[in-house]
Length: 123
Image 1: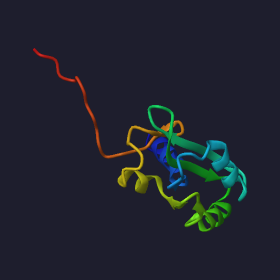
Image 2 (image 1 turned 60 degrees about the horizontal axis):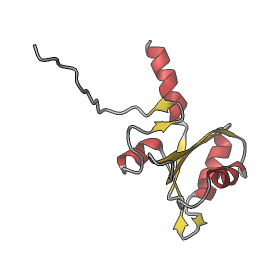
Image 3 (image 1 turned 90 degrees about the vertical axis):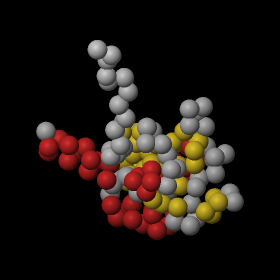
Image 4 (image 1 turned 135 degrees about the vertical axis):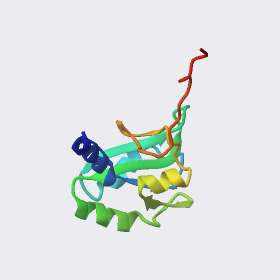
């Protein structure tokens, strides 16, 4: 069980977040921008309850060298009137850019907060 937990956490460890994306830019345009650096292993644009972009995209490249080169090139890149930034998922959650309930693809972001609702019955 512990080994399985370590594998699932490490799968998220290499993902990064592209932040400060203008909300009018379409998902496929951001994906195209990321793919100019190399083959993507993972890509997910974060959206609110209405399906609108929140200006954050999670991504991961097939290899770490490409990922490092892309990060260096994307950091500070101007898109529209904004400058893009690359952060780790934990930083994005701490800054409040993405809710803890939002998912990184198919995995929920691990956190230290536990929310229990209706677990006690009146007896």
